[in-house]
Image 1 (cartoon, one colour):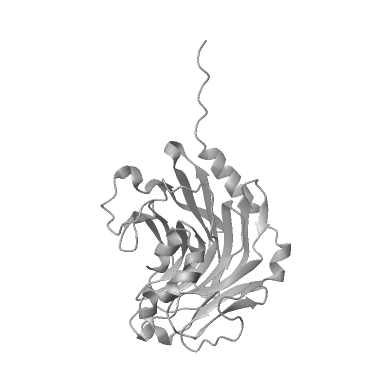
Image 2 (image 1 turned 45 degrees about the horizontal axis):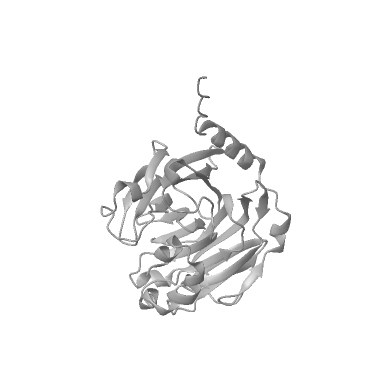
Length: 302
């Protein structure tokens, strides 16, 4: 079972217990080992995170905001192409995107005109969106995921990306899913090499994460201060994670040395304890929730 399939089922615990013994072991020597930060966080209605790539290579996914059911981050593809990616899985297990009846599929509620949306398969199925954006190494980018209950027992998941060039938040997409949780659980980040051609193992991939926070179901923001270092079943040992200059980080591949935290270590970032979520995040959410709220039915005539 792939990493993303495990994450779709909310199985960070299964990730720790099962992945190392199964499919990803065959990637040893073919791909950089996928490395993850499993954050300690309460069930939430929003997840804010900041991410900065310091080392990259074609075929890399720097996933910034992950949860049990979807993920959100930036990718370096080939030939210098770069994108922002937001995906949400369907509620049931299949690899054929056409197999599920409409009622069980992830639906597109809305999206920005520049964002490409569609369905994916092969590792489970679901809705996927791409925003072409030439992100740069060394620049901090900001990500926000929001979830709320919707009609028909569904939930709506929205992705927002802050564009430093224009100093504005961009609503990329809102997906609706019959997936059961109406809150964000299993909060995490990861770095993945999806090129998997042997040559890709020679390059370092590293990102750091800062100022992460969740808005809990009672409406309060709580900083993310603790993480657990996990990885897939690939046997490569050139991986690392920890805290550097007040930021969580993940590294894999190339000349990376495991000198900061051992795999499966749980550790804290003291700098995160005093975090105050930027004011524009709350303003953005308040405005979005008001503009997109379902209309209140008029009282029945007497």
